[in-house]
Image (cartoon, rainbow, N blue to C red; front, side):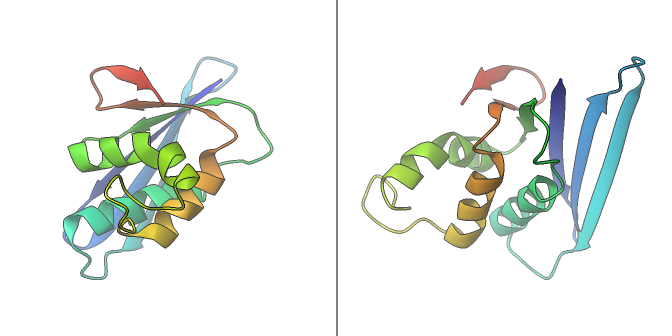
Length: 125
């Protein structure tokens, strides 16, 4: 089974959509929203991803596709394993921004085979 997690932000909202196909072949989407509290763009995107990851059914086994449109989010999501191994520091030895959110995202998705896409092409993590 595959589950796609797409995120977006608006001026006022953090939006996460989980999409999958049911056993009968019908698509099923669930959208979750939270108020955006003035966070800058990158922080808002991280918080939207966290919102979606918190909705994942941890009891199920599936491939998780993260549909991330910004280069910042794609690069960051691909860096999670390395950051975790390096004590949540970047390649320059500095602590990563939004560290607490990224740690929680890592914990929520580490059990899944995860793919990252921009909506056009997919690459494995």
